Image (cartoon, rainbow, N blue to C red; front, side, top):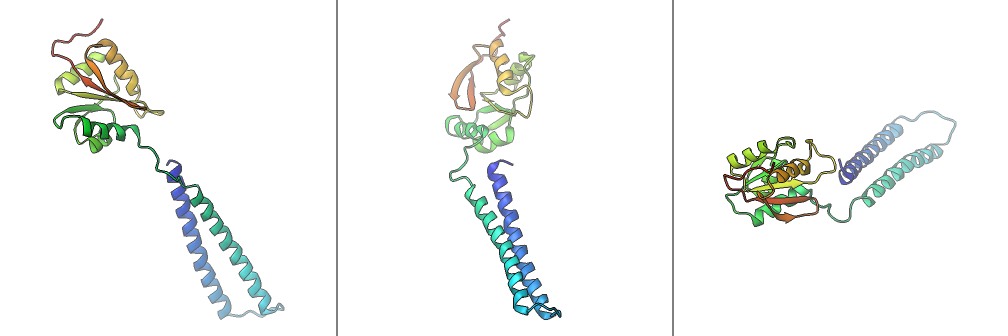
Length: 193
């Protein structure tokens, strides 16, 4: 998980630890006072040490919780690029358009457009172009990822496609971490060779 997810998980662990500590304190004090042991120590000194021990544990748990909550992000994290691409498509693209994207579920959810998968093919751009023509794709989403799930990444695949078919695509939107291209090919478009 990311930093926010890790902070939430850590906060949950601290909260459960605090609840467990309170339960153990109550249980131990109930059992401790129910059966008195014969000791040479005065009872008040035993109570003092128990309170000190349990109070110290409770203080450490509260301090840990406070530190975890202080590290939670103060402002919302930015959307992943697939989410932003989907939102852009939803508001700028015709409802009957077909979109090609590598993260189909996310882009579909946010765009509400018909989606086809952008396969990771860079060595044979004709295969991609044949699929674009056959499926009547209107837009292609190219996302820049630090750690892509599929290799080669979108930019390598789309780069070889655009190099082979330079007149087939028009930049519709340039984002910080994604681009959206409109397909402007005619059925007779041929590759640059």
